[in-house]
Image (cartoon, rainbow, N blue to C red):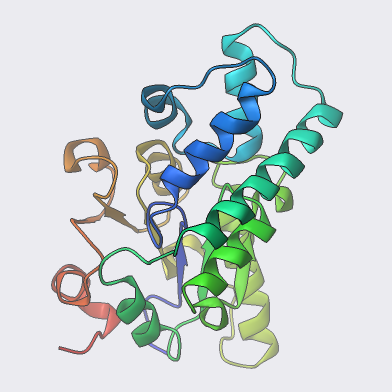
Length: 238
């Protein structure tokens, strides 16, 4: 294990897999049944960076509707079914460079996923791209009380990895945000995790570099050669 980073914490949608179009379609179908129209422009402008709870709450708020806890659970169950169907009907692929990058890292550095999506959706998509075994820690929207852009999920993933490494005798002191590297693509989330001390690698898959300027490192893709040039401490092979 390198001295830094001791863990790499990845966002999922739009960072590892190109699943945002599927999420948009699932949200649109579920909300349409509630009489709520969600445009693609609204989704990419307002919902990226929110967890599912926040996304449904935002959409309901646009139409002055109240989202009760019971209704949210119903909507999430419906969205998960739609997502499962979409994943199985469309062949999921990772974004450029992701497969090679993850496989280079996972034997040397603990990897986690921190997502605003539900666990089941993440698991289905990871299995679809044959990367499930590479991630020992997964934090989904149901695991936190405050969803993205709040950094709670990243702090939770860091603590889980820290506890495991201490139990295995691989570290003597608990990890801090400075010991980790967060990989994100949403400006609001980048801003929040940087504020609590996480060095961050921002990927310009959805937003441009000017919107991700809070990040310590900015790349156009997760192609290993590009990441290696920006973050040599990761020890990626040429």
